[in-house]
Image (cartoon, rainbow, N blue to C red; front, side):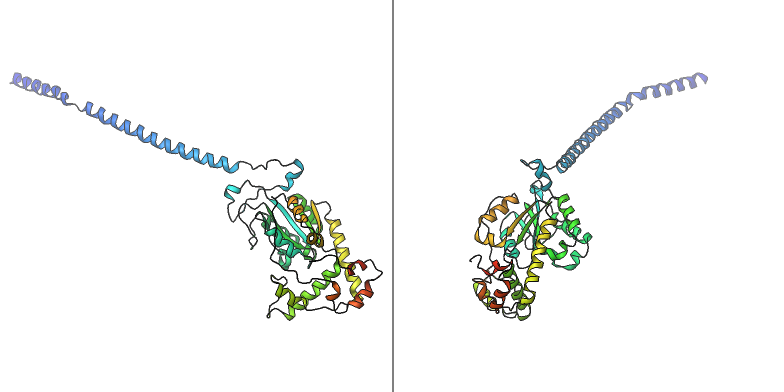
Length: 346
């Protein structure tokens, strides 16, 4: 019996020992190798994608951070060359196109509106009009600076706004619109930010006074079909407005002329440290090359500039004033006598 049991257990052990011939070790190795290959493949794909993404991101960062430099700019001019980064749009391929900042400093009825339309006819120049005619924008130096920053960063949108490749950006600023009252801070701003000043005045202040009185009258009379227009685009409209002949107060005539004359002189003294050019309206009317000088000053390509505006008051002054004889008597023998004479023709 014992011998039978021993034989049985030996037989069972032999069965157990023979069973490993079917051990799935090889199968496990195959599965393991398959998993390894898949893992390596997946990792390689991920690494390639990450590498490509990283390279693209690095390239974008490098391109975005590449500083712009204007070629052929003299060291003394670098202060006036800018590369604004607008918050409201992208300058895209023009990001490294240099931009010049300017301000037209003038007085009302001195031809600044006509002059600005000439500048805006240039494809690379944007002058945004009389921004500080709105009192809240000039209420204090902080609001003035904030407005200027927005304009020069190309984030101020008007009908004069061009495209992202604008090469000169500016505005029209009257002396009595916070400019003289805050001249110290504004001069510092101009010099720090590299803003160039274009002074535009009328040589004949008597003509300017007549234009002011006529424009003031039309604000109430509205001679053009019940509409007031400071500037016109047709000869017919100009003739209608020119029919009105103002009567000048001869008692205040010389004091008023002196006041404007002094204000112009002070403005030149206040802003003498800025980069600037000085122009008379009459000189631009008589000599078109003056516009070339302005384009050279702004460092933009020379172009033929044009305006649709039509001059309102033409001809001799004697035909434009109701009490011309009294005006003539008042100014004769004074420093303003030259204003009585015809100084240009249009």
